[in-house]
Structures are given as structure tokens and as C-alpha cells.
Length: 410
Image (cartoon, rainbow, N blue to C red; front, side, top):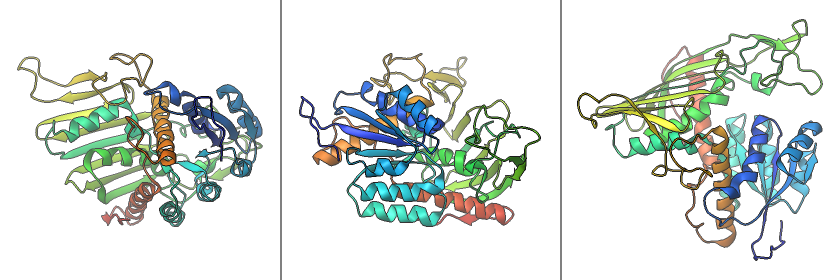
């Protein structure tokens, strides 16, 4: 563990990121930016190491984001006593072994979603969480988008009445090109494709609005692209990567599209859909919430806003209206160098706020005192298990022709 003191007497937090793909680079950037938003109470953040099995990717990320070291072996991160905390941003099957090794080495862990590739491994991680006082967290960052946070607050304050209906979709195009090579994202059981990659974000976000999902039904999966070029060398599936049309192919194992209904403990009903083959939608997340007193929603195409329709305006001007997030909304004041209405936020900011919250929790764990003006804490491994149980219920519903399935409660 890093025990060096700064001249101010604060003990730095030394961080590493395991995985240098798109999300890994975003974690790397988030640690760079964490001290630039909100209060000045964080200790210095030491940007220690980026690890990736493809060393050039680790080296590139380390250089871009100012990290001191790059390595192709994640075990070097675990074995380095100077590193205090790690983000795990690799294939789902590696989450458990890396998390277990990191916690055994005394390091705090922020693990990307979904928590693991199997419920058994996820439960093992949650059981380990119970035995440690280290910070353990799972990366559900959409709840920190200022527009979504404002939508959540609006609904929770009763502005639309009791939530009756939620319609949500997360449609992306990263798998639309059939020549995108095979990667771990296209391998694994049904339910681990678009549902496991994109649906987890919707599930966590919707449960912030309407409470826990207790039942699912009407589930259906579909595969549009049934085979992909075999990955060669260090080329794997991702945006902007295209294989050869005459390259050897291998079958896609999991779903491109998933649709299902959900019953919430609050009594709300939801209709949810996800896809990774929706042309032209790089990040098409939309949410619409309806109640007896109004409607409200969010569109990722306008991430610094949400919309609302209620009886508040006078007749003649009543109707759906777009509301820009500003200082009166969560995550805006001091969350940007320009913290006022009309200044955009993006998915990158969500990661900054998430990783900042993770670092705040580490400080609180070290000092035994609440962090001043702390952001909401990160979801736990136990929360990650719950989401995986919902995913499992959806997969069982789809396998049984859409039958209703109760969600096992952990």
C-alpha cells in the first residue's frame, strides 16, 4: 500500500486500470479528472499503471492519460505494493479472479459491469465483499448522468404521481457491421449479449426510478448477425474495426437483441428493449416514465437535459417541455468548469463522477470519517449480483417462450 505523504500530510491514492479498451481508457481519464470536479478534499491521485494484454494499447493509454507505467500482465498491478486501488475493465470471465487477487493484496476494487460472467462467480465476489473493509464497487455510471439524475429526482419527488408505466430502450450499432471481428462480447450464453452488455445499465437506472424488479416476462432474444470473422493477432471486435469478407468465420453465441417486460416492487410496469445492431445509434438510450399526474423522460442524444409534461403551465402553453439541467440539479454545481444550464455533459462525465465517488469512499474508509459533501456511494458487489439475477430471469423467460419468471432475491 502507498504510504508516502505529501507536503500537506495527505496520503495519496495510487490507482491502476486493468484493461485499455474503450471503457478502460474512460476509467483512466476519469481518475485524471476526479480532482477537478466538486470539492478540493481529495488527496493527490497518483496515476500509477495501465495494464492490458495487448501492451501497445496499455502504453498508448498510459501516455495519453499521464500514467507512470504500462504492463501486459495484470498480476504486476496486484503485486505492486504502491498501488492502492484498481479498476477492472476486462472481459467478464476475468472479473472474479482479478477482484479476488486485488482484495487479497489489500487493494480497493471498482469492477465494471456486469459483475461477472456467471451468477456463481458474482455471488462468490459478493461473499468476499462481506469479509473485507476495503471498498468494493460495481460500475453503474448512468445513474450519475445529470439528466438521468434529474429525472430520478423528479419522479421520486412525486411530480408525476405514482409511477405506472416505464418504457426504456438502449439501442447501439457497435455490432451492426457483420465484418466486426469476433470478441468476448459475442461469446457466452444467451442473455450475455446485448442484454448483459447494455441491459444492465437500463436495469440499474430504472430501479433508481421505480424500485426493484421482482418479475419479468414476455422475453425474446434474436440474432441478426449469426457469424463473425475470426479475430486475428490483436484485432478484436470494437467500433471502427472491420475484418475481411473472406476471412474464416465463427458463430455468434449470444443475442443481438433482447426485449422483455418487467414488474417493479412499486407496482410499476416496464417495457424494455436492447440491441447492438441498431444502425446509426452509437449510444441510443431513451427512458419514458408515465404516471397519473404527468410524464417525464430522458434521451441520451440530449444528455444535459430531460423532458417533462405535467399540468403546471397554464392552458395554451401546456405540453411536453425540455428542461436543461443546471445548478439546481445534482452533479452540476462544481461538476464542470462551466456549471450552468446549456453546457453539455456526456457519458465521459458519468465515469468521472463515478470514479470520484469511489475515491471518496476510499478516503472515508481510511479515515473512519464521512467524506465531506460526499457524492452518493457506488453500487456494491451485492447490487451487481441482484442485477445478474434479473438478467438470469430474463434469459429463463426467453428460453421458455416468454413465460413469466420471478426474480430470485439475494
